[in-house]
Amino acid sequence: SSRHLAGHPSASPMAAANAVSDSVVATAARGQRAFLNLNDIPELLPGAQPSANQAQRERFQGRCRKLHQEEESDRQAQAAECEAAAGAGRAAHYSELEAMFPNLDAALIRAIRSDAPSAQGAIETLLMLSAAAACDGEGGSEDGPVQVPDLPPIV
Image (cartoon, rainbow, N blue to C red; front, side):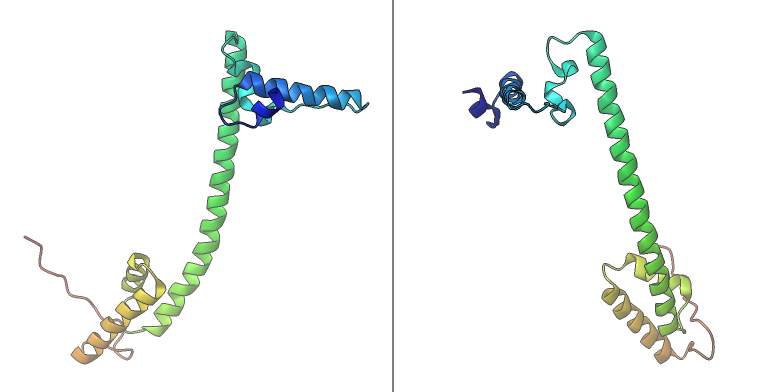
Protein backbone atom coordinates (compact mmCIF):
# COMPACT_ATOMS: atom_id res chain seq x y z
CA SER A 1 0.00 0.00 0.00
CA SER A 2 1.06 3.61 -0.42
CA ARG A 3 1.07 4.10 3.36
CA HIS A 4 3.73 1.41 3.65
CA LEU A 5 5.84 3.02 0.91
CA ALA A 6 5.77 6.46 2.54
CA GLY A 7 8.09 5.42 5.35
CA HIS A 8 10.51 3.60 3.06
CA PRO A 9 13.70 5.54 2.22
CA SER A 10 13.44 4.73 -1.47
CA ALA A 11 9.79 5.77 -1.70
CA SER A 12 9.05 8.35 -4.36
CA PRO A 13 7.72 11.77 -3.41
CA MET A 14 4.44 10.90 -5.11
CA ALA A 15 4.04 7.75 -2.98
CA ALA A 16 4.68 9.87 0.10
CA ALA A 17 2.15 12.44 -1.12
CA ASN A 18 -0.45 9.70 -1.66
CA ALA A 19 0.13 8.37 1.85
CA VAL A 20 -0.22 11.88 3.27
CA SER A 21 -3.38 12.48 1.26
CA ASP A 22 -4.84 9.18 2.58
CA SER A 23 -4.19 10.47 6.08
CA VAL A 24 -5.82 13.82 5.25
CA VAL A 25 -8.91 12.07 3.88
CA ALA A 26 -9.17 9.92 7.01
CA THR A 27 -8.90 13.01 9.21
CA ALA A 28 -11.56 14.82 7.18
CA ALA A 29 -13.86 11.78 7.45
CA ARG A 30 -13.67 12.02 11.25
CA GLY A 31 -14.96 15.59 11.03
CA GLN A 32 -11.67 17.28 11.87
CA ARG A 33 -10.20 19.95 9.70
CA ALA A 34 -6.99 18.75 8.08
CA PHE A 35 -3.87 20.86 7.81
CA LEU A 36 -0.92 19.82 5.73
CA ASN A 37 2.33 21.69 6.25
CA LEU A 38 4.34 21.04 3.10
CA ASN A 39 7.26 23.11 4.41
CA ASP A 40 8.28 20.09 6.47
CA ILE A 41 8.45 17.93 3.33
CA PRO A 42 10.28 20.10 0.78
CA GLU A 43 10.27 17.44 -1.92
CA LEU A 44 6.46 17.71 -2.00
CA LEU A 45 6.40 21.45 -2.59
CA PRO A 46 5.28 22.39 -6.12
CA GLY A 47 8.62 23.95 -7.08
CA ALA A 48 10.49 20.74 -6.31
CA GLN A 49 8.45 18.60 -8.67
CA PRO A 50 9.81 17.82 -12.16
CA SER A 51 6.61 19.20 -13.67
CA ALA A 52 6.97 22.58 -11.92
CA ASN A 53 6.83 25.71 -14.02
CA GLN A 54 9.44 28.47 -13.80
CA ALA A 55 7.47 30.59 -11.32
CA GLN A 56 7.03 27.63 -8.95
CA ARG A 57 10.73 26.79 -9.18
CA GLU A 58 11.75 30.38 -8.45
CA ARG A 59 9.38 30.55 -5.46
CA PHE A 60 10.75 27.25 -4.18
CA GLN A 61 14.38 28.33 -4.62
CA GLY A 62 13.65 31.69 -2.99
CA ARG A 63 12.07 29.91 -0.02
CA CYS A 64 15.10 27.62 0.24
CA ARG A 65 17.47 30.60 0.16
CA LYS A 66 15.43 32.44 2.79
CA LEU A 67 15.43 29.40 5.09
CA HIS A 68 19.17 28.98 4.59
CA GLN A 69 19.81 32.65 5.43
CA GLU A 70 17.64 32.37 8.56
CA GLU A 71 19.51 29.28 9.69
CA GLU A 72 22.87 30.95 9.02
CA SER A 73 21.91 34.07 10.97
CA ASP A 74 20.66 31.89 13.85
CA ARG A 75 23.92 29.91 13.76
CA GLN A 76 25.99 33.12 13.72
CA ALA A 77 24.00 34.61 16.60
CA GLN A 78 24.47 31.44 18.61
CA ALA A 79 28.19 31.39 17.82
CA ALA A 80 28.49 35.05 18.85
CA GLU A 81 26.78 34.30 22.16
CA CYS A 82 29.12 31.37 22.77
CA GLU A 83 32.17 33.47 21.89
CA ALA A 84 31.01 36.27 24.18
CA ALA A 85 30.49 33.83 27.04
CA ALA A 86 33.86 32.18 26.37
CA GLY A 87 35.55 35.56 26.01
CA ALA A 88 34.38 36.70 29.43
CA GLY A 89 35.64 33.46 30.95
CA ARG A 90 38.86 33.68 28.96
CA ALA A 91 39.56 37.22 30.18
CA ALA A 92 39.08 36.14 33.79
CA HIS A 93 41.34 33.15 33.20
CA TYR A 94 44.04 35.38 31.68
CA SER A 95 43.86 37.63 34.74
CA GLU A 96 44.25 34.62 37.02
CA LEU A 97 47.27 33.40 35.06
CA GLU A 98 48.83 36.87 35.14
CA ALA A 99 48.36 36.95 38.92
CA MET A 100 49.93 33.48 39.25
CA PHE A 101 52.96 34.42 37.15
CA PRO A 102 53.77 38.08 37.88
CA ASN A 103 57.35 37.63 36.68
CA LEU A 104 56.21 36.83 33.12
CA ASP A 105 54.98 39.30 30.54
CA ALA A 106 51.17 39.47 30.19
CA ALA A 107 51.36 39.21 26.38
CA LEU A 108 53.50 36.09 26.70
CA ILE A 109 51.00 34.55 29.12
CA ARG A 110 48.11 35.27 26.78
CA ALA A 111 49.97 33.89 23.76
CA ILE A 112 50.92 30.68 25.55
CA ARG A 113 47.38 30.18 26.86
CA SER A 114 45.78 30.75 23.45
CA ASP A 115 48.23 28.36 21.76
CA ALA A 116 48.04 25.65 24.43
CA PRO A 117 45.58 22.80 23.85
CA SER A 118 44.39 23.03 27.48
CA ALA A 119 44.66 25.27 30.51
CA GLN A 120 46.76 22.61 32.23
CA GLY A 121 49.24 22.57 29.35
CA ALA A 122 49.53 26.36 29.47
CA ILE A 123 50.11 26.32 33.23
CA GLU A 124 52.84 23.69 32.88
CA THR A 125 54.59 25.76 30.21
CA LEU A 126 54.27 28.92 32.27
CA LEU A 127 55.65 27.11 35.33
CA MET A 128 58.70 26.01 33.34
CA LEU A 129 59.27 29.54 32.03
CA SER A 130 58.79 31.03 35.47
CA ALA A 131 61.21 28.54 37.03
CA ALA A 132 63.77 29.18 34.28
CA ALA A 133 63.45 32.92 34.80
CA ALA A 134 63.90 32.51 38.55
CA CYS A 135 66.97 30.27 38.09
CA ASP A 136 68.61 32.72 35.71
CA GLY A 137 68.06 35.53 38.17
CA GLU A 138 66.92 37.74 35.31
CA GLY A 139 63.70 38.71 36.91
CA GLY A 140 61.12 38.11 39.47
CA SER A 141 58.16 39.79 40.94
CA GLU A 142 60.43 42.48 42.44
CA ASP A 143 62.13 43.29 39.13
CA GLY A 144 58.99 43.26 36.99
CA PRO A 145 58.19 41.01 34.05
CA VAL A 146 60.92 38.94 32.46
CA GLN A 147 61.94 40.28 29.09
CA VAL A 148 62.38 37.50 26.57
CA PRO A 149 65.39 38.24 24.32
CA ASP A 150 64.96 38.27 20.57
CA LEU A 151 65.93 34.98 19.03
CA PRO A 152 68.23 34.82 16.03
CA PRO A 153 66.44 34.37 12.70
CA ILE A 154 65.92 30.85 11.39
CA VAL A 155 68.13 30.26 8.39
